[in-house]
Figure 1 (tube, rainbow, N blue to C red):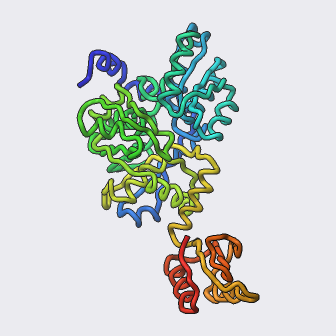
Figure 2: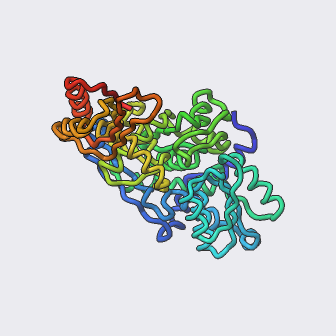
Length: 412
């Protein structure tokens, strides 16, 4: 149930505020494209359109809310500067907006924040403080600094102006995609989902708005299902942009009122969506940004034949994470495989094994040959191969051939 403070904040936020935000942001942020994806439409059965906020300034939608909030500060607030807490995207949004406004900004980020997001935030001119292992600990530290300095706190999601700024994503979708049936949006603290839902439902009430949260940080999902604000015990997920233990009070109120459903996806499903977007659409998207597509691919959101806008909320993913996800994706799809085989420790034995691999048209990426490991029987050698393959059937064919030739071979 909403308390008086929630209702008071809610009264400050209206559809007109979102419209005003759109006017302020015109010429400041990119009007990101809404692009049709034939590939993902075929895979999901929906007519899928991507709202590409991964192509936004600072790499995510967060610049919208941050800029609008800072735009509305008075002279005294600007003189004291601003402070915020963020896992990365809101950090960059605030840093960029503060730089445009010519005011000082301090950003507290978790010590675990991706290096790319930390360096990008510093690059916009903000002072970065690393504290805690997640957003909630960084938030506590930021509030301590605020109390000591008097800086204005720019909340990442639970603020009327920030929500109004994020709501401009919804306005653009309705303007760019005629006859949209649904909008699928990632959910963490709820600022984007709340703003988009507010905008969409006021302009086109029949359009469904569906939120997607990581199962590793399910606070808003749990709150929505139970009908009351809930804090999560954990916030551990590949989708660091939505790794929040405590959803906003105001955002929960708006999500409860305007969002049609909230579902969850797990990290493996998000990882698959990231790699598929990279390969099929040539789009770099972070975990939070891929959550909506993951829900469609897994059938958590099933809208056959409907025109569905999927918000790709950000593209600020660490390059090391991309490398790991690509490798895992190749292994999962059977396009790479690790094999181990025992063979006689004699001249020519390795060459014979490799000839069999070549016969199956597999490419060797890496090889190791071990005859001294105590776990390897005497007069035997263990060979470990990393092969480039075509698909699972190709992998099974290689293993079958090697076993037919007498090799003891297994994956791993």
